[in-house]
Image (cartoon, rainbow, N blue to C red):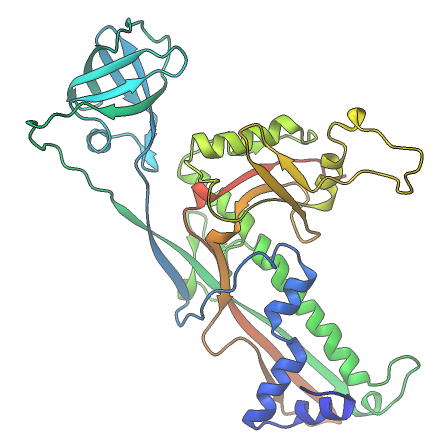
Length: 405
């Protein structure tokens, strides 16, 4: 690694392979590592392997639900709502409900046993010494188990369908130029003008990457998001964009909560954690779960339960700091505030299911552009792919519409 200004300029102007490697290490010290050091959120998002296509695709499947939406009337129960990420269909019901399935209504413990299924309706009978009572409206019914015996033949086999999800890539680039007179002029405090200008430019690129990984939205043609070669200037998908995309498939306001400029409360965080687990099958027993917010939102969290706190006379610190939220579902979530985060939003995210990375052989590139004058011009660029999050509905929830002032 270069150790002084002389070494720095030698590496910058030479073009052999060894100098190129040292230059990248010196300029960026690993671009992702430098950025992560300045952004708490990016420090939690793993850098994935390089890719060689303009679109990153992966297959994903919806897990079997633990609850269905249905309405009981007499000895008939009618299913509604959504299953497997889309409006409920008779085919989807077959993958979840069949003869012998036992359902329980959580509100009062009434259990029913399915005797036959016809489309979106099933015939049922009371089970387990409970008495049937009609639903006023469609409610959630838990799928308890299925009655089985040694002599029952297998019927209605099940399988899960898979879908593709994808993210695109984005080029980050800056140009740098310096006239020979300024390059050779010594300024107070600034020992080397070229090094100073390049450092400032790289800081700007690092900040752009931090914002992009958190907030970038893909190009939208008015109907769909467009990735890769389908648009001349593609953009990647940021972490905070994923809830917008998944909620467009079908909405769940319990995990995509609009506060309409009202301050965040403990109840909001409790509800987000509970519904992400209850409605979307989030697994809090595995992964790396964090609450991520802007410092302004963290300010409101610092004041939670402030009237119940006390300070001793020998305390030398003023103010309170909250770095963990203990949810009522029995899980604790560390809180991460980051200035690159959207001020109006808070997310609950499993970082172990996320990653971003670089295009193959394009982690960092600099190219000198020939000129006719007494100045040097350079192009600095690199290309990244968007945030890959596996199981976005299960691993990411958002509260938005928070105060920004």
